[in-house]
Image (tube, rainbow, N blue to C red; front, side, top):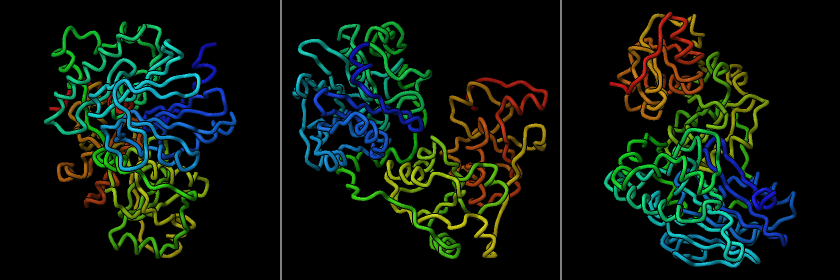
Length: 456
């Protein structure tokens, strides 16, 4: 058993593809690193071990979730540790390269590692002079490095070159040093393949394809070539984190709304988000509502498809986890939650209000119609139906006019495709069919084979 087994508690957010860390300091106190605003799991872990969070460290101004550091300061009296260059507008200890924080037996050393963001710090955890591990945030991650285009296309190459230097600095640590990144598989800040979320310096030197680049120019070219699209809400969260998220003094709730209240909100420019499974939405839904099934990826698509100031009412099934809906929204800055439709769709129908339905079919039932693939570009390139029209879900609203009438809308399984159909229906499309399955299933039903390569 090593330090990580006994004292380090990874807290993985599968939906956003990120890891926070809780470090048991051995004296009833703990260090939290890159905690999100949804602190349910962290609080539960700390309570089980009888820990008070004494320190909350953030590696950078996160773009994909609201930081929980301010809340930990309120709830636990935690000292917030973060880069002085981030100019955070709330009480914190601003650190610069080489600064050290005495954790009581262990030491946390700040290492300037710009690239993912300008003010990015990694935190080296030391036992005396011996490095135990490095919290590398969005710098060195498993088999990759985090994206460098979040501050605009004009700075992408500059930050990629900074990322190169930061990774080279980290690889000078001893090979046995553990690497504890924040971003991992599933994160739009990095999205490397694989399931491993932690690594070591030695393992990355052997296996990370970016570190295998022969020189800086090759590194930059490889990193930039790996960049895909990212959710729209990323463009606003860094500034919200700089200002500091509002402290929550009570658990946010979803009030019950009558059908007429939901209708009025929609008519007044609000949004209705239906979180039921895709098949339930397909059978009957409120016209103009947006289908985002409640699952790990719910927050990503909420933040990609709705404006940050959206007033939202939810349609749920009675057995769905309402706190999960609320926390996924709150952790990315959506707080104008009007409530949920009391009684669900049955109440809406009993009120005599209009409804819609969307065809949801298996591959063998799909009509002969244009095939629209709404997956990410990398997924599409790895294998798609020949002749498919490729429009990523995140960009679909801006390209709705390009979708042929009566198209078959598809993704990898069906959830994103149902979301896409709801986006298209809001834009005036009708007669759409959503595929309950993926491109391989569809091609097999048609007696065809997938093709590879980027969209033309």
